[in-house]
Amino acid sequence: MKKTIAILLTLVLAVSLFALAGCGEQTTTTEPTETTETTETAELTPIVVGASSTPHAEILEQVKDALAEQGYDLQIVVYDDYVLPNTALEEGELDANYFQHTPYLVNFNEENGTHLASAALIHYEPFGLYGNGVASLEEVPEGATIIVPADGSNETRALFLLAQEGLITLPADATVEAGVTTLDIVDNGGYNITPVQADTVAPQLANAEEGTLAVVNGNYALAAGLNVNDALAVEDASGEAAQTYANIIAVREGEEASEKTQALVNALLTDAVKDYINGAYEGAVVPIF
Image: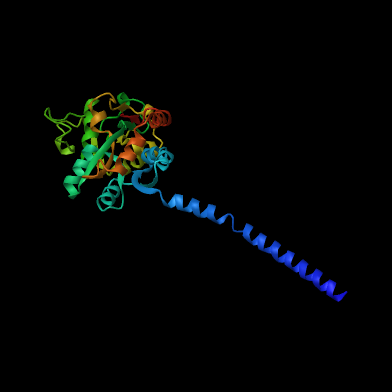
């Protein structure tokens, strides 16, 4: 009897050990799957792009999935000024940036000894002339202050817009390529033309006395909640300005045709991105492709 009980206990123990061994094998079945997913994510090649928050970073967000399908991880670094994204690109911290137009880039290279180049034209942001408590140019009081961005190419652009509307007079031989500043104004129309840092134009307009005007960059106007349809005057998007001041993808010289650059550019130059821009910004941002 004791012998029989011993045999039965031995069989029960063997079956239990076998069952435990089977359970141990099941708990490891998910590990290979998790490892595979991690490896796939790690295999994506990063493309690091500096951008202004609006509209540039928003537009870049639209191509993240398309680039991931091609094996790229688009990483967007948002900047709130016009200097750091260029210095970061020059120093190799970025693969590209998207916030500026070609005249600004050329001027920046000349002043800072950088070596950056345009890889593609993406969109155009018409400059707008906005008023604080002013519904039309006819209502602008005599001696009113007109705030303009102070940096090279944007100051030129703002002054040409004021001249376009007959508020000031520039030299007859003035050109966008040569550039102008407030010192070149032939007749200021009795207005107080005040250059300030570009990213402060919209806030200063909001806090200025009634009757003040300001020429605001497109992206800063969007960020400040200014609607281009409410502007007192706007650049003609069908004119030379659209090509001259189109916002670009900038890279280091010599990398315009690199695989990363071409992947980014091709992802942006699509009907899907064009439709997004037209729908999201209602004329404040105009695709140029």
